[in-house]
Amino acid sequence: MPFTKLGLSDPLLRAIADAGYTTPSPIQLQAIPAVLNGHDLLAAAQTGTGKTAGFALPILHRLSQHNYGANRPVRVLILTPTRELAAQVGESVSQYGAHLHPRLKTEVVFGGVKINPQMMRLRGGVDVLVATPGRLLDLVGQNAVKLDKVETLVLDEADRMLDMGFIRDIRKIIALLPKKRQNLLFSATFSEDIRKLTTGLLVNPIKIEVAARNTAAETVEQLAYLCNKANKAELLCHLIKTNDWQQVLVFTSTKHGANRLTEKLNKINIKAAAIHGNKSQGARTSALSGFKAGEIRVLVATDVAARGIDIALLPYVINYELPRSPADYVHRIGRTGRAGEEGQAISLVSHDEVGALRQVEKLIGKAIKREQIAGFEQAAVAPPMPPESPRAPRPPRNNSQARKPSGNAKPKPKT
Image 1 (tube, rainbow, N blue to C red):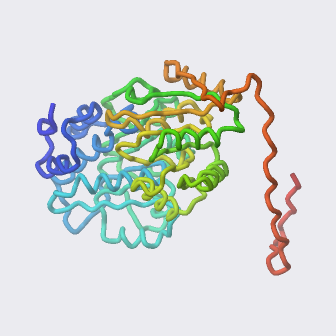
Image 2 (cartoon, rainbow, N blue to C red):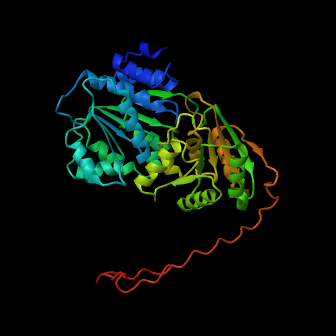
Image 3 (tube, rainbow, N blue to C red):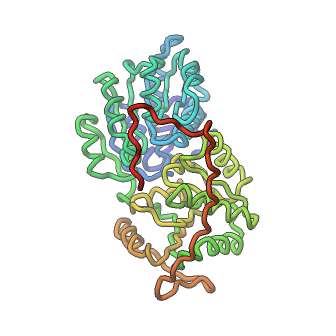
């Protein structure tokens, strides 16, 4: 069925054509009519299935039918787990609404940047607000935004928001909304926590599941290279250079590990940048922009920071270290093989990660092909890791730098 048969307005159909979409994806085919008809929605959809258009297009259609003019209360609230995803969703909403007249106003707010510019932008009112939970509550506390006119609430990547501990913030936000509203919940996986959240939130929802739960896209080729932990960096460099990969997303388990790997890659002239929670928003935006533009060859990311990375033809995702949660594996490799395109997901698996690989296989319901590369074969027994170079000691503080304990402060116990 073409987009023209789904009931969307002509300005939205023009935006769809501008975006290069020809036929609706399965999630769009099911979600658009449901949202247009005002139903609540519970959708299990992998990253890269077109779910943003699946909710944004019908929401914009409904909003454009009743314009508030100069008085712009927040009518649509979209909550996302990370800054990157918030920015990506906001960009998509603006793109889809480009031909609407009068134009609807969309704003994106998230933490990690100064709050005052966001407060100023909200003063003129906003139709669609895309936000991370913590910053939204900060703005509510500053009386910079009111949520009593919200008509539609979208929880995007709800599973990730719960994983990140946002459940209390989400419940606080829901308490500020009108009781009568439309609720749309999108999640890559359905956990017991997600089911608890939907109880009392969704009213007779239409349920959509466009792919088997906890599975990767069929267009993603999955492969595991068995290796020794000490040789992972060297193996990664070998793969990138030998195969002449030009755009590679690499996942590490820690921020410190991301920084170290980035340094190693840059030292051998593989241009790389790290993106994680300790990086400033400016540094994260710059790294992501450079990666999308092809100026940065390798983007090294942690799980949380990678949410919102949306590159249409990203060919390679590398698990430098397997994630602690098998479900995060699905999230990671969902960065490639999007919208029916082919992609390759490679995991570098050391001795201590074989069990984690089996857990991933159990979750996705299929075996992942294992291979070894000549010169980087995994030893029969895990060899001892070489000791890390000691970090340079910090210079001693002078008296003016030393912190003075308050009168009531108790000394911290040494650990």
